[in-house]
Image (cartoon, rainbow, N blue to C red):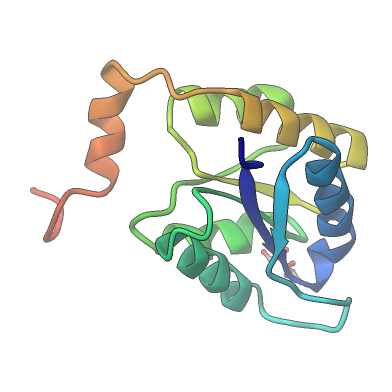
Length: 152
Ligand code: RB5
């Protein structure tokens, strides 16, 4: 069976945690596709959120991980893409519930706010947890209606 492919990106503030999570993904047997950056030089988080969203749109993977300083900016940027449901986690419960209830396809972490142990635990739980469907499917469907603006 092929290893599960996961795309991952950050900005400079998330770089260190991204490196930790690439190693964790590999330890978990995943095919980690690192979309950058390659060092801590200052970059703009929307560029890396867009890069990851494009990779998912192109079917490079169906799951992603993003890291910036707080996780907030890169979440906002990622969620501008209709096919992305990015959830920010500071704890394992959030990482589980964003899968069970929101069918999140991107886990977002704040490199300046979360410790590496908690971040690794969030990643593991995010990857292991399935979407519950049922009543949550209807709500998730409303996040990205097929076309046009939301009804009033
Ligand atoms: C970069 O300094 C910082 O603003 C960014 O990583 C992030 O926290 C934005 O939301």
